[in-house]
Image 1 (cartoon, helix red, strand yellow):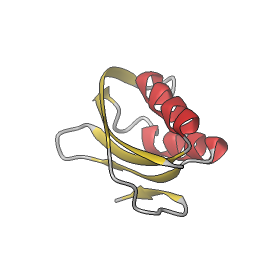
Image 2: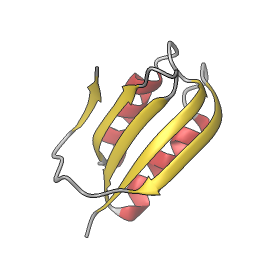
Image 3: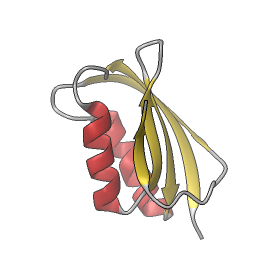
Length: 90
């Protein structure tokens, strides 16, 4: 049974390829959903999949790519949407 988690990642996370690396990591882990930049400078995401894979992607968000500086990650359980792929939203 799959789970869903919604995340908000704060810090220096825009302009550092955070979304592209998150998409790469999600695909590696087999997680579906999306990631997007928010007007306040944060990055939001919705992750679906097996608990272990989703948790691993949330953990990755706590570090991000090496060019990012993550100061905070808020994660909460979300509702599954049946997403079949992972995408960057604009």
